[in-house]
Length: 162
Image (cartoon, rainbow, N blue to C red; front, side, top):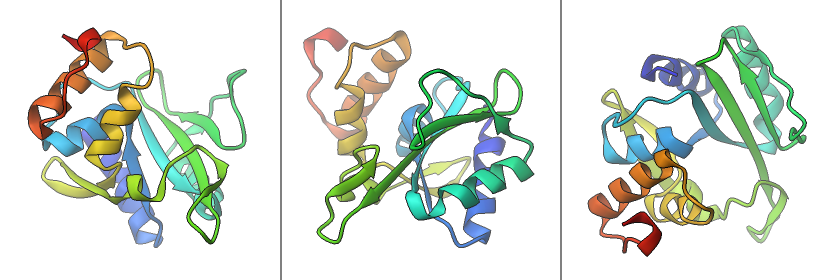
């Protein structure tokens, strides 16, 4: 998944008046302000009211449904070849800001901004990206991401990441 692919989706959504928040490894790199490792996919957070339109935009960009047994209405993948896929994480909050549907993104987690190839993007806030990345046993890419976030933002490095 190239930076140009990420930005093409971000631009298409912005032109349609939609906000998507970059999540996962691309979020880490956006927060760091530079691409630090290869990415085979893009994770995005999408409000429930916008999910169908974002799916249409992805289809227009050449992405097709790529069903897996783990798919849910709030978490599914569209792919364009083996190294370009988008994992949609759909959420909704109630009037009080509590998660009422889908992926548990606290409202304050959707306040981050970063840059990809010098362009500003909305993303998961750094503190929350760090929290999400340290909530499960790390793969090699997670070791890299958490160490980079800790170094840039001064977060404590858990022992398992040392």
